[in-house]
Image 1 (cartoon, rainbow, N blue to C red):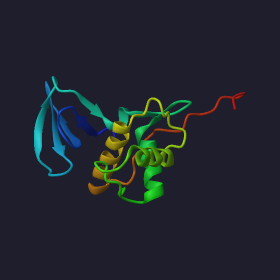
Image 2 (cartoon, rainbow, N blue to C red):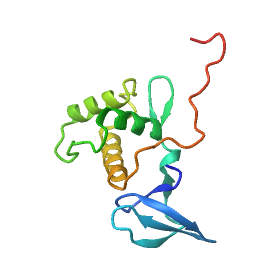
Image 3 (cartoon, rainbow, N blue to C red):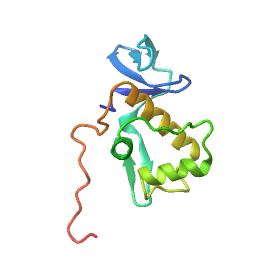
Length: 142
């Protein structure tokens, strides 16, 4: 699901991929449902390709959002414009207890909350990429 949801640099919000042309993508805004082309010169990132740093590995964004949904069951009631850094870091520790406090910045946490709330408002409740499994532990490792 997150492979079809895009973040476009310089444009607020999230967008759903509808079609792909020769030199462009056709996307639809999740908030106002307007459709428009995005050209290959713009920086576009699928949410399914994003991961959050943790102490031992990178955790896919879908897994972090699933953790948030399991704890909150809906939209997060944090106002990112008024929340303190400590409140945001406490929220992140709740969503991903072993997140890397040196490499995950407050702005990353704000963006995570904004994206999560946009997806909830658009009706999404499952965030993991289909076929994405937990990494299998090899024998002999703890």
